[in-house]
Length: 456
Image (cartoon, rainbow, N blue to C red; front, side):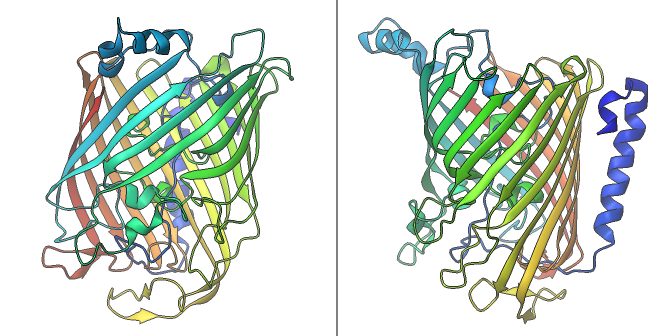
């Protein structure tokens, strides 16, 4: 990407050129839009990366362990001075948790979908209450080191999006006629090994882990905004398999992995897929570029009605303009063959009422641009402009272009243990993909969200 070598004074034209070209490419399509059901009929809507969306100077994931000692939150402080706390410290194990609750004022009656994950209008959601047990590998050691991570949503509304097929998936079925708003999900469980003697360092994960695709994440602390982009929501969140990250030198990391597909935990819906990419940290750490992919035999499973096997291409650019401004552009294209509405949820016409049948090849793609201004270490504001196209309507249920405009503020307090994030967002779809206040199909949705993230 030529922008890697631009001077700061040339970055702003690059930013708005990216926004303009994204919109131009997206609007050149001629599709219609549809809503993802709250409880998809065995079709997973999930995906997420573990990196912050707007931190271009972050180290590669294979070297992501910070040199500074991480702050101790409540659970580790409680354990201090006990035999259990001593055991944790001696073995480099950290136990911590996070809770994310939100309230979203909305013009919709009963659902904000396809906007997510704060999809419930005009009510409080406990999106996540997550427990994490983590032993990080030591990337500075002269010898190989082992680690692991166990991370589980103990209760929250995010589970219905994050669940992997064939892993606690029955929660999405109706609870004997009762609500199934809240559920659990072991979103990460893997062992990790770091070998400093292979090339310039080799990191290997085996288990279920966050995707390397996209810049947003299931982890709310890795996002600058409350809501997720449609591009993020309709691509992989997690994978089960093996992923390696090889440090080619101090600038480039090469990722290679074999998984069972997107958001699937073995079983009949799984299919071998390649997950890989290349990340470069350039310009003295001010610029980070990513080229990532998932490649498989991209076929819709008509027997099971699952969409876990599709191909994805991603190009991402993050640039630190100066001490105050950061820019990120995330662009993704995905496709699948042999879609059949006889096995999937319905696709609606532009009126939002009439359903139609569809069989064959389908694709969806998105352009997300983020601009962040940092007031201080504890406060920053982020703008997100997104163009997302569901060309045949297979991901959202409505064919066409979605445009989303989001403005949010993050304020951290209590030694970063508590985050407060207000957010304004406007969505517009070519089809009538959203609800109005009476529950009727409409083109637009306006929301004001406020969430609280507590780390303990």
